Length: 92
Image 1 (tube, rainbow, N blue to C red):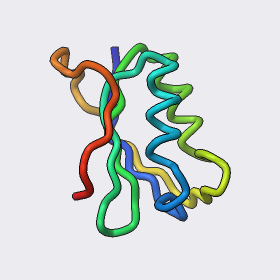
Image 2 (image 1 turned 135 degrees about the vertical axis):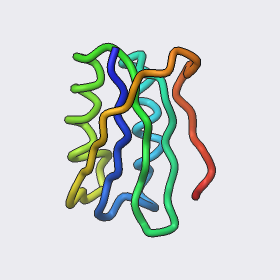
Image 3 (image 1 turned 90 degrees about the horizontal axis):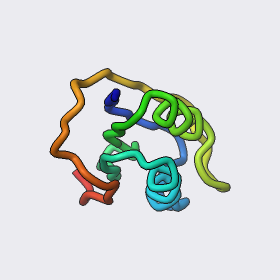
């Protein structure tokens, strides 16, 4: 099991990025959350089996139609077994 904090930059707000990420994460059985940030980025915590998380991180580089991702930053975290499901969090 692996966990990553992800910050996605570009045109990623107002294009359905968070909701598309929720769908993709749930299909891959990844746990975590996603939210908009006031600086215009999208932040997520993704946790799961290494191969599934790698697949979701690859998806993050393009996102849904209408998104234009310019950069992604990731930070490895210690997995948290208490995290279950993949949810939307309020903007921070």
